[in-house]
Image (cartoon, rainbow, N blue to C red; front, side, top):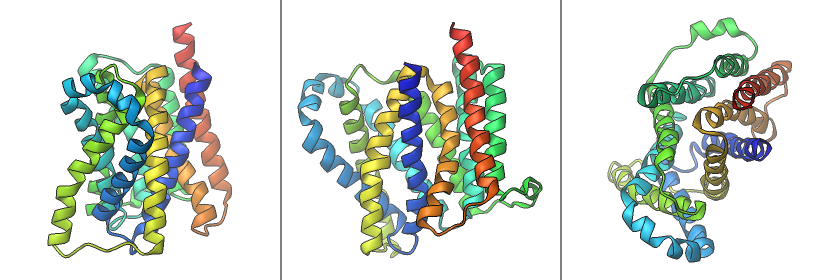
Length: 296
């Protein structure tokens, strides 16, 4: 079960790392709210084409819990991505990488405040090690540069994104007993419905940028991989090992984003990239070893 969860969560974070790179590539090629709306429109079309029979079987549960299911889409799908894509127009990738690493900490905090679920010493140590790895990446190996970073409007937006995805992860504990296909379909529908009013505001304010070829490539990537594959794999990972343990894997997103940027954004591989990746993997291993010992 653990190995399956590790595989699911690793692939999910790989695709989400690609989402961060795609979001950066989208700047100047498609506006954030149009990107979010088209992303979920395409994803929902794929979902309905493939998953409709399962959705029909779960329809009584969907009707009974539609508010929660749509809420998951609003908080975890639309709000997170709108804030992330918009933040990339105002702040640096360095700041976003560091801020995104705060998601597991917020998950730990919410679990403790709401349910008195304590993070184990191994989880705390593991998070600390992975955070050092992420800071190493963000500061290009010069950790002392962390003190010179300053917050701007984009950083505040990204902090909101961190909060929204932590809330989404916690909300998954209340998901109704439906098949994962139905869960993703209902959440994607909620994401699209909630994105449309924001898109209307973007159009009315004259800030809409229609996608060009690059914009459409970003839309298709984000619709298929981060929107569908990653969400399914993350939900399954949370089901298998719990929110605290699964949330720690989120720290791998900036690392994967960095490695993918080497391929798609033309950045050069540096020694600190390798060191940071090893630190993140070591942190996850430490936390997981402590968790599995506790369960034994």
